[in-house]
Length: 105
Image (cartoon, rainbow, N blue to C red; front, side, top):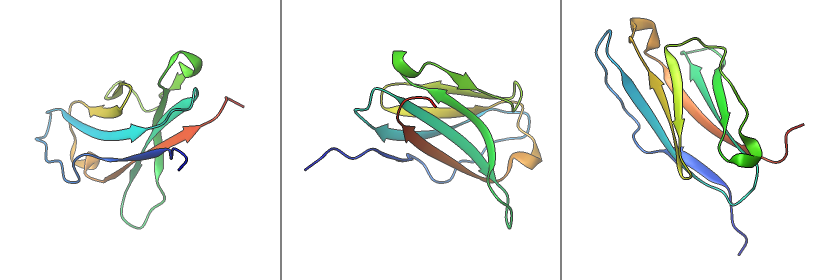
């Protein structure tokens, strides 16, 4: 009975208004000292696009967000939120959360 790392969405369908703000949330479980949480956006018939990632504890406090100020994250010990501000029509897409464990390479 080893402990498994896992992650998944808390809501699967989020509706927002143009120029508004939405929060997409994934809960996760891991007892690894190094945990990194990733967000991707995927349009139909396209590959997922990397949005940002964040380390979630003192051992992995790094982060990287090339997507601009409309996309931010809020991460706790058991969940990560992707916050999208100033919503645009083009934000309508499938969003993926992902978890990686292990020391930074």
